[in-house]
Image 1 (cartoon, rainbow, N blue to C red):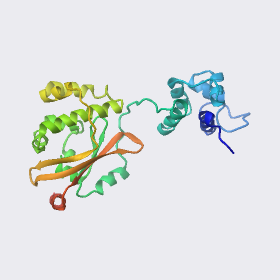
Image 2: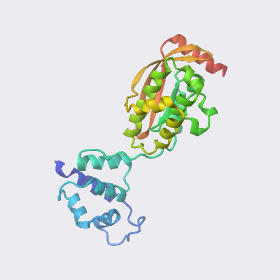
Image 3: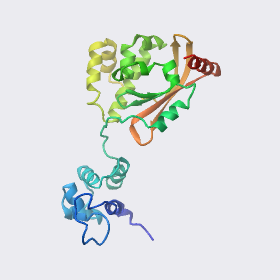
Image 4: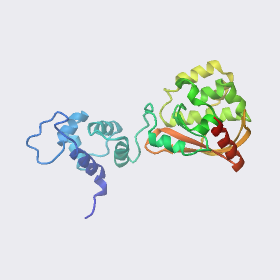
Length: 274
């Protein structure tokens, strides 16, 4: 059996339509030859022409617009992954990013952090709010639990917290890199309007931030190395790596690994004492 690759979108939409419960959506259950919604019912929910939707399932009528695909995805109650799949089939590209506020992290993801006993690790949002961390991060980087939630922001800490500033071996280079990477992350996540208040606030309170922001540089977190001046442990050499959280485009994980076994032991001893 061969599959008509020219109508993969229509085949997929038909399969999603077939799983819908018409009664739960306010449609009558009687006189249905197949399960799921009728084509005209999907069109009604999407506020598009029933003829146009029928043609779409049949592979006729040309490529749909992004707006039409968004409406159909809503009508069929598609998940984010399913919506992306529909766009890839219909337009050959994913939908434009629409920022959604984070919903926190799952217990499973927190256990991933906790399993890294000597490596500071944290989860940040696209607006660079820290929403989860492990004991090593609290001991080496910042005791996030001692801060108010609105203060657990990487930029606020970098430009407003004297202890965080003093810990950086070359604060100006680090701060400039943080600003450029933050700008790229916010744009990639479609969160430019969401960070405008924070940007305005920091431009007023920090001349350095205002200067770095006006440079309009963009950067990539990726991976690299840094040296921290810890008030108890002294200088620590760390390697960092950034990871996307699959299925959660609003979150990313940053892990700092001690470069030497001696540094790892020192971090472990500090955690044990605290």
